Length: 470
Image (cartoon, rainbow, N blue to C red):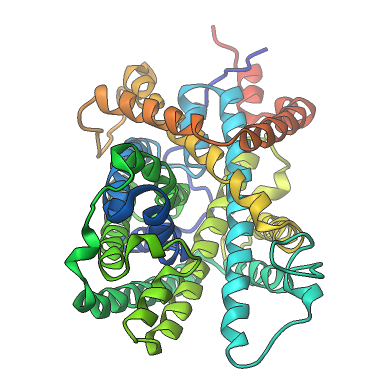
């Protein structure tokens, strides 16, 4: 049945695909930072400190970035060897075959859809709080989805729907314009974070760092499992391979540098936050705003709220971009309808799939409470990290890639890729049963789609049937 037929990439690597090559290493770095550093940097450090680590929260972020960096190194070797759109889906297709690539690609579609939807709901909440300061409020029915905690009479989150569609419209205009706006927003976001650190560092009390690990070392690792998801956005960077100038050089730079910059920001903000406020008081939804109020710097709270909105906007742009390029890659292989790979001749953007992705994500954001969709983001990403890490071992042993000139090689091979794989699998085991059940249902739907459409329209299988091996 050829379920595990592998994608032959030799003839594809230098083929003109129609996607416009406009992205530089700087653009990729800002894309990565845009996806990794969102509203979470203003929320999760306090929650992790209060519930898992105490003042040692920065250690959780350090451990998380080490685990994530191992996966990032594996992504970097793949992206420099196989600079094609599709990220982990394309890499797995090349080394493990079509069936596993489809399952992973289908899982990643859910990751991007639910990531965009959940961030859009958070964006809506921050935006409504911001305009609330000016005495402006929406009718309860338009504030949030029905069943949202703390909202009575909810029906539809109109703001979340609107911002998701606005991002889809922006992406439909072209990657050059989208990247330019993202670059500006990322710079603004970093300046806001540095503003908080620059103000709060003068109010740090050494006594707040004692005891440093009130929950013990075990709490640090539990906190790392939560903190890990702060860094997963770099996966979206690797979907941009075919729109990058000199991808063999720029892809590894973009992936690794964005992860390192994000790690420095998370760790620095965490260290200052627990020094200003005792960890036991940080289990709130807005710990950064709390810190500013305690040091009587309320003027900066509005700036931080603005920074959070800007931060979430960049996440929406990059994750939506990643989802549309994933759909482009899968449809180009014939596993999804061809309409999803058609490019606008002027903007070189897959406009149809960009709007389809945006509309579906906007519906999820408008009608499903955030606590139901946020849980579903993580498992698809971790499965991608695990498969890419293990895939490096198969890549190195595959004779088809012996002549490929990879500009980046994973250090510490084969130990590092294997350790990365095991670390990702371990974190998957820490996810809640509900997440696994929802993931199983999503995969089952994907298998039906593959059996009914993908298997019969596979471009790779069609080429094999026309040119069977001797």
